[in-house]
Image (cartoon, rainbow, N blue to C red; front, top):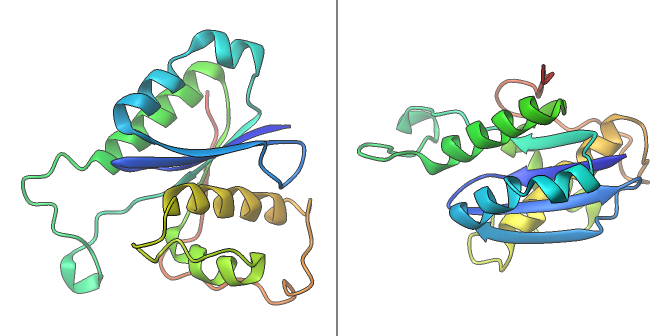
Amino acid sequence: MHLLAVDPGNTTGWALFIDNPIPVQIGEMSIDEFYDWLNNDTLWKENPLNQIVLEDYIIRPEQFRGFDHTWSRVPTVQVIGAVQCFARRYHVPVHLSQASLLSPAAKRFHVSDPKNRRLKNRNAISALIHGRLWFEKQGLIQLKNSAQPLQAEGPPAVDIEAQ
């Protein structure tokens, strides 16, 4: 099982997992670096992915804790589109995970909360958490403190199967 977890944005965080919830690689890249990495056909043919976990992004009005995207090209949405296109090309299922799950999961997984904007590598930590949440949802890991399900604000996570 090769899983890529992605926190999209101007600085895109990612974590690569192989067969267990401890990542073999984790990092952050600019959008252009991430696009180049994603478009490395040799890398993905030699190391095919079985699953992608992608942090979802929903444009909300400001009164509902949304950001003002006036005159923005919304880079987060562009990265999501690139990952979905990649997944379709390589026939990899995509699981969209909500950002509202990050803070409670960070406490349970005993990692720093990536919602802290001063945290170094917070986007990579976010990707790590989304990946671990996917493993947990699949029943592949169980934590001592995970008896209570996480409560998310907003819509539930959605699975999109690549064609």
